[in-house]
Amino acid sequence: MAYSLTSALQEAGNAAQMLRNSQIGMYVYPVVTPEFSNWRVEQESWRQSAVLFDQSHHMDELIVEGPEATEFLSHHGINSFANFNLNRAKHFVPVTPNGHVIGDHIIFREREDKYVLVGRAPTSNWLMFAASWGKWNVRLRYDPRSTSRPEGERVLREHYRFQIQGPEAPKIFEQMNGGPVPDIKFFHVDWINVGSKKVRALRHGMSGAPGLEVWGPYKDKDYIHSTILQAARDVGVNLVQCGSRAYSTNTVESGWIPSPLPGIYTGEGMLADYRDWLGADSYEAAGAIGGSFVSNNIEDYYVNPFELGYDFYIGWKKDDFVGKSALQQMKNSPKNRKKVTFEWNREDVLKVIASAFEEGIPYKWIDFPQPNYASSSADMIMQDDKMVGMSMFNGYSYNERSVLSLGVVDQSVQVGDVLTLRWGEPEPTAKTSTERHKQAEIRVRVAPTPYAKEARENYSDSWRTKAAAAE
Image 1: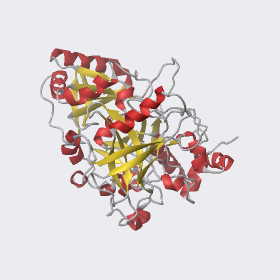
Image 2 (image 1 turned 135 degrees about the horizontal axis):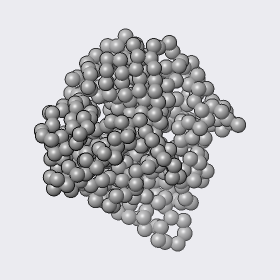
Image 3 (image 1 turned 30 degrees about the vertical axis):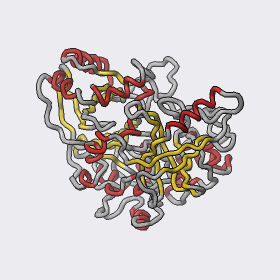
Image 4 (image 1 turned 180 degrees about the vertical axis):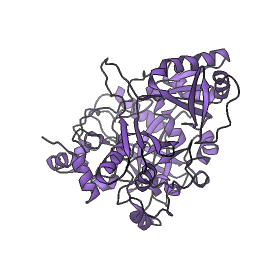
């Protein structure tokens, strides 16, 4: 029986095949109800009125504190910490010694010696390993995401986390604060009132619309939730609660790829020790790769910061950090791809859906609003007979009336180009989240990232641009 990722890989014989045949099932956003009203109205609300996201359950939280907390995090992330003052937040990105992205977190600085990081498991796991592998004077406290299928058991977290955004959101903030809220800059933090509670608020916006994210002790969750809803009623704002079905689709409009495959399955030294440390039931061992792109070389699924648009985070002036040497070699490589949005052809999408109503083997079903059947996705993007990229995260936007996906393409590809996405698994796998199907070819038009105009003109000029990195 496998006890570590290393032993699981040895038993499987091939990392890519192990992950393509994972039986973990559908990727689940836990605890939060799938739909409060319906996912179309919930998507529409972040553009037209205001939406309430309950982010309390689907992300890990990792607290890092101690005399060397700053040095530890700076060494294990690509980001510069030079201007990272108190009450700030950053998009924290660690890479392997070989320069491949592991994942990302949002990192908050609460004290000189204390940081809170929030995001998916790969980054949390890497930092917990790094703290035990190196000699750092830090303390880590880990609060894993809520279980995917709690089966009626009570769920508790360290903190609740809510985000309110949309054009009508400022009215709600002022009402629950009891007056005008501070003018909080993007990715800055300040204190506001939510009823009788004083809470931290981050200026943020998952889909590009104005928004604040608030958090505090989990025991206050019900009070904060009811106070937010009452404030919206008091000012006549239609605040729509967003369920887990719609929540994950906001990123296709805002341009963030949430689940790149962590590039940790190859490499020696620190990476070999990491695979020994990771359990056989870890995210990295149990996760699934889905999509039409099949390779026996797991490194073909890796991405680097340049490809995801994170290169302007890189703190080149830092003396050293994990992956610096590799990134220096990658910096101007013509092999680096670029991030884009793919707009799926309406007629081709309808053809795929219609096949489910016909005799014979249908095309792979496109679930709405998101076909979230693997933890990492890689669908082939073709230009004639040549693969020029891969689609990595997709979903339907009711706001745009279109299926969209995010991915990476060769530098030669331009906005407006029409390419072909191969949809569906090319061969049977052991995945329980796929049905018997045949592949389809779907035309896709290359579009800007972020796709949503609001996000491009506001949100994209924040932590996704060089201007924000230079703050």
